Image 1 (cartoon, rainbow, N blue to C red):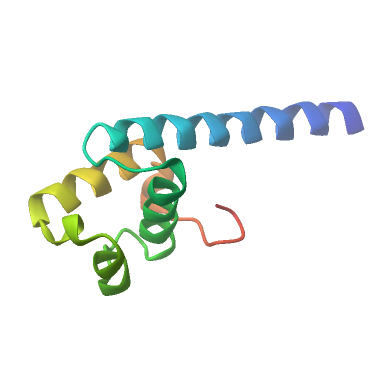
Image 2 (image 1 turned 90 degrees about the vertical axis):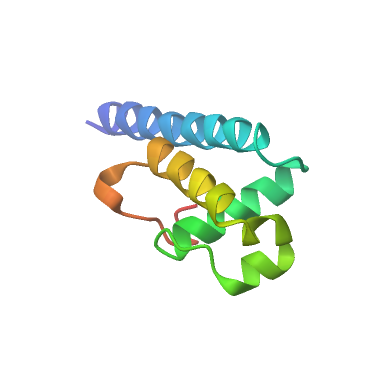
Length: 92
């Protein structure tokens, strides 16, 4: 039972990590920046339930462009679909 739990949890964790990596790479096709910056954008949009907030726009002025911000949000939705559920910081 412990082994099965570990295998299931490891598989789920690997899927989350792959989704995060794939989302980061897709966003980097739209926005140039280091991984840390792209990760911050992903984390912020996920924790703000899909919203591109004012603090994020202040940190990344390129997100003031509504069309571009919508594309980034759509990518995050694609890689983290979970029925529109966004993760909090403890899960990101």
